[in-house]
Amino acid sequence: MLQQAIQVNPQAWEKAYLRFETPDQEIRKFIRRLRKLGADGWSRESQIVELFCGRGNGLRALHRLGFAQVEGVDLSPTLAAEYQGPGTIHVADCRKLPFADGSKDIAIVQGGLHHLLSLPKDLEQTLAQVRRILRPGGRFVVVEPWLTPFLRVVIFLARYRLPRLIWAKFDALATMIELERATYGNWLRCPGVILNLLKQHFAIEHCDCAWGQLTFVGRKE
Image (tube, rainbow, N blue to C red; front, side, top):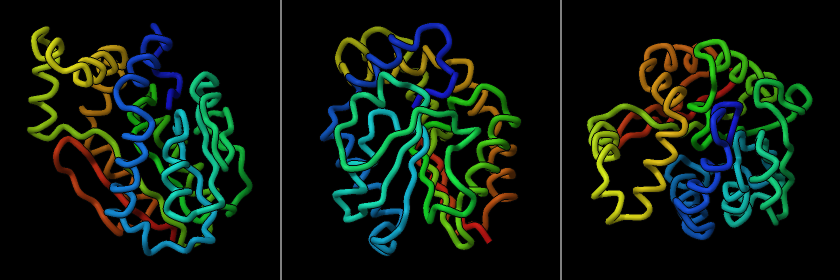
């Protein structure tokens, strides 16, 4: 899930990420999310890659949904080493994906594009790579933070000690936001640029911004 963004203290970010949710909690969340985004209708023969896959719980969720051909990509060897599942995680940069042209049916990002250092340059490179590896008609599924009123409240509360003391999960989230402040803030400030790039590369099937999240499903034409 790290992509050269947490430059000051990647170990502290990884520790906060690992205490934000247990693996089972994250897997259940991913299953609910993927079903909401149409995964029940995807062919179980699909070749799927998850970018910024972290410790691989998205791959576990996909496997529980019946997908056997799953791979992941992440820049953190620490998080990738935690994966014990049926798929494969490649330690690599998502701006230079280690897959052949037109080799995947579905590419997924569940919170990783906002770690990119330079917008729009790094996002353009990543989207171009995703488009390159997808077959015609292939899907790109994106879930990322988005500056809705709900997220504004979350960011505001993260400045204060009391809510962080009361709720450990909120403290973990606040810690991650602090440690990735530069890229997180840059991402939230560029909604128009981000949406335009997604629309340039993919035909929209679904696009929604609510409860602090962007959910996007596009197809390679």
